[in-house]
Image (cartoon, rainbow over all chains, first blue to last red; front, side, top):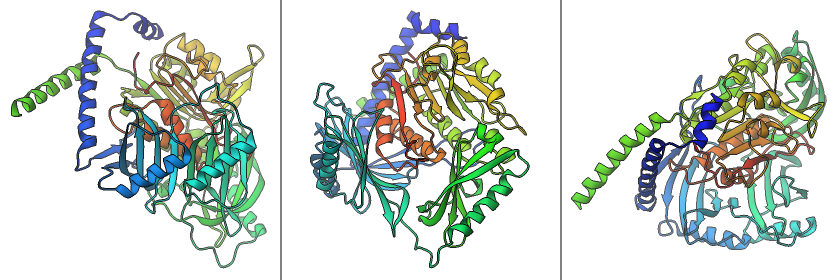
Length: 321
Length: 252
């Protein structure tokens, strides 16, 4: 089987070339059709992600985009131009826009792309329905010969850029070298009432030369804090009671490593019946990191449990396999 | 105008017929494997719902890229023998399970990365019996070419990982072949993997025309932020190797 696939790679026959040529024609026509759609004034809907997979009992999230133009949404395009310039992003030969309903992230946003003469996206900016920047990304690459900056300069660059683009941050930042993308990650974790909002942050990736490559601003709606919070001892009883039930008779033990109060998204991590539930506001919860031992340690590194800080119910959690 | 429209329709019909013929002539198989029994109620007392979600997502999105037929298994069919017996055939391979870079007595850097097969119904995973080593995968792929390889596991995107080599993908970001390997560097929450992969696929498959590259999709997914991570020693970090200009579609 491998030999067949390998051989196919290196021995192109005439028939294959003919079929490939036809494929190129088809692709060309399709690309042409795309341009017609993209420039139509009536807008168009594009679906991504829908599809019936095997064994699926849960509908796939979808992303639906409607084309917007500078004529019908000048506010979005002006905002995008301002953010692009504030962040020092490249200017495209043309700009395209769309309004996206994204059940992946899940959020609605307006997106403007800077596109070069060859049709490649140079950069994009995304704004939530209130007009706040939620993502900005440039897709070109820095020159390897550019002078490199240190962490302090990278942090100043990040702070300047997000301030100029209208993103408000509070609290302490943290800066880390990025071992994969090179450069620096500067991020501000969001907190509310003194408690971290899990996953919510403003994050800036700064290239080694000090220019900003991306900005992310993630902020979820929070429920009201409970009138009275469960104490850590009571919360720990909920956690140990849950794991005692889960691990009973399975040859596995556990250790509760850490418990902190955080705002979390209720989720379906341990309960498939909740997979179709709409996103709910984040709730204040005790977040317990539990390290399995025994048999389960072979395949699960960590189980994180969310316990509602108000009523002690399990809201969901996470797994490191 | 009407003649032009008629001509365009005729060309489209002819092209779509020929396109269908071309598609029938070339089957670019994609395999999606996900370990679910190891993360089921039988082994943990609860059923981790992420393996099924990631499996469904990968199936739907590989199909959009043009991989067909889609094979592989969710659950007990994901055995080492099934995986190794099939891994040479597909052009795309997606795996969601436990993964790590294990010590090896020989070969730089003394690492032989591994993934765990599904333990099977009623069984739980054991690293000693369920491991599928990258060295075994490399033997099974026997020099074959792969377009898209995604290891939705912990740590197989780390620099020490030997998994890309099992699929003949060099750990460079400047390949000129049609290849792309994606993995995570550190211990990674399932929720973060799902968020990342949803963003990756949604950017890559934004429409039917495949004008975007996998490396752009990677950049987009990394840039949206919001990823939970276990601790400061394990920040969320994905990684890729391959061709920066490759759009993820099958073939050569």
